[in-house]
Image 1 (tube, rainbow, N blue to C red):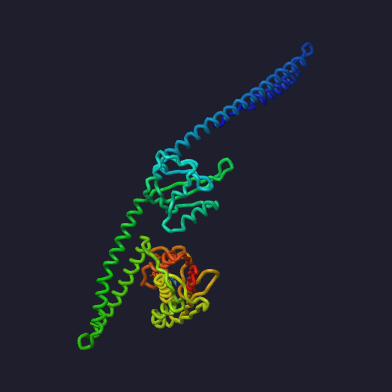
Image 2: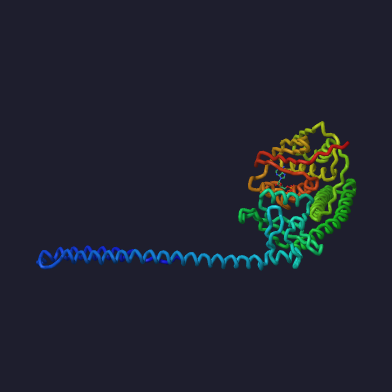
Length: 431
Ligand code: ADP
């Protein structure tokens, strides 16, 4: 609040009075004879009165200013004391769990909601490291979070498991915002309990997994029956019937692929997928994956050029995951490349990694769609327009498979020019 200061108006008033008085005396002296009167004495008196008025005004302004300053200071002090208490109350009783941690993760203070979520209502958590209470879905993700935090980065909405004092686990989204207090780097940590949402999500994934598994048997039976019917000669089947059986086969095959994709996604999401590491001849695996789909490429008159690093012969990895990655990328390259295009597919070595690369000169991916390419069920706008046959699950599955193998996938793409996918996997050569 601002205290209005006393105005300087009386000073100008005093000067005006003095000027008017001198002026009046001078004007009257034209008509009246002041010879018997001490004019200079009167003017002198007037000047003294004005000086007193000016001095008093100056004094009043000074006092008012000092008073205003004192009032402002005491008001600010009261306000800061009130807001300190107010914020302390807000922090302690907020329904959102808050913890203050130091630069290493040691707990400095904890509010009631955070004690509740950690299950430590009475236990003293001072000097407990918050990272000792956390776990993540993927093995090394917690280490990465700790490194990021200690490296001075902000953590935002990270999915973590919290180990409660009674041994139970709950799911939460964790964020840590850095701030400085008394020259010390601290972190304000918030937790949002999402255990219920996670349970619902898991129940849905389990249902998809179960349903996909159960659907596989009837789909396989339909496929076999259609294949058996297809074998019948022209004496039992006319052209029209043959055409319908062909359509039936294509549809059941497609249904089988979709159901297999659903099953894969649910297995990755439930975390039940266990890789099996065996010795693999990478060149043979690539040749096999390419052979399986070469007919589709030939039908579109697409040239397939391969490149294999001869120094990598046998590696140790999960063959079904690798096959899934190579086949999916190759199948996409064929699907999204126009007639007469070219695909370069192969692998090489960079430091301690294998680099798998699949490059095409097809339709590419619009720049606006690129950030969402590895999302579940996402298809780029140009693909939706010109290639209706797709689920948007392939890249999501590949990304999950690559994570299981501790690798990484990136791509570069220019619409109407082509796309290059690059997979980096840790190289373990077989003895
Ligand atoms: P689907 O191919 O079944 O739609 P994917 O998950 O395999 O699903 O691919 C997701 C989307 O990524 C595709 O719909 C397409 O828009 C884009 N995409 C993938 N590979 C390529 C590629 N080689 N060229 C252009 N777009 C691609």
